[in-house]
Amino acid sequence: MTKNIMIVGVGGQGSLLASKLLGHLLLKEGYDVKVSEVHGMSQRGGSVVTYVRFGDKVYSPIIDKGQADFIVSFEKLEAARYLEYLKPDGRIVVNTQEIDPMPVITGAVSYPENLIEKMEKKGAAVDAMDCLALAEEAGSSKAVNIVLMGRLSKYFDNISLEKWQKAIEECVPPKFLELNQKAFLLGRG
Image 1: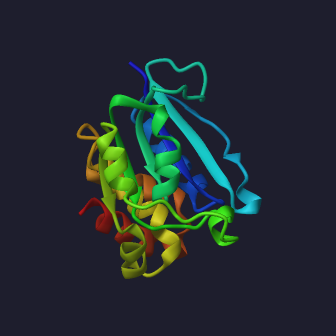
Image 2: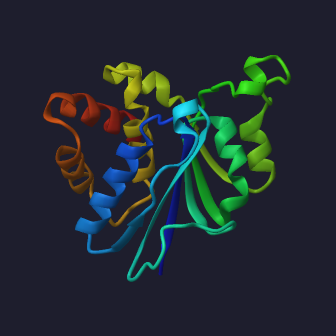
């Protein structure tokens, strides 16, 4: 059975490292894995999405609406934007940070309120946490991606903490390893 993970955010925000880490870990676990390139407007600070699909045999990295087992989001509005991709029994893992899109920055609209509650009212299981604060506690605001991976790891009962940590060792430059390991454990909780 194929599982589908969408990583969504604004700009680059570390989605490349998050998808690389997942792809590396899942390949080592013996799955067939397809990881898409980053789609969207990363250079312009726009919405971006990366797809990670894994299973016995995967033919395409693209995830259709209603097929995502997980949406991992770097900020609330992006999680809400991609809600229609979530399976009925899927889960959203989201950083509670609010990154203003251009219409908010220009004053054309306000940032939507109560997004977590709105997603839950639509039936989504939402695991929301302040990943930015945890990343800063680990030593760098840029570690939000690894905090999110730590949180996501809680939902993979079949993959041990040690295997996640080994994948981080193999994907992160040595000078950033300690920081990223700490961020991962803070996200895991």
